[in-house]
Length: 91
Image 1 (cartoon, rainbow, N blue to C red):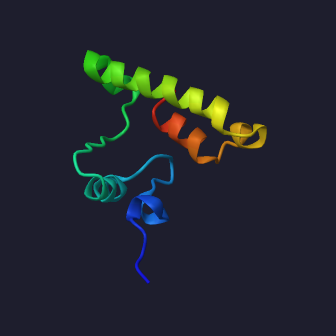
Image 2 (cartoon, rainbow, N blue to C red):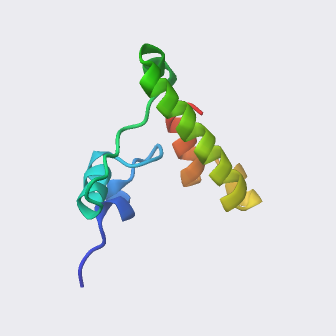
């Protein structure tokens, strides 16, 4: 039986939230034309208006997903994937 892609398994996920480099490359192989980038922190966003806009957009999108797609238990759980991802982006 074939293994699923790394971005769907633990070795493609960053322990602090989001995907690691292996996960991003795996996703890009399965979805040609995609170009996933690493998270942007506030310090990095201050240097470039383009990355600041990317960070702001991601935070707004994920906060909406958290509100609409998670239960109250998951939304409050600091170890949920969505909360880890929001922390990784300094949201």
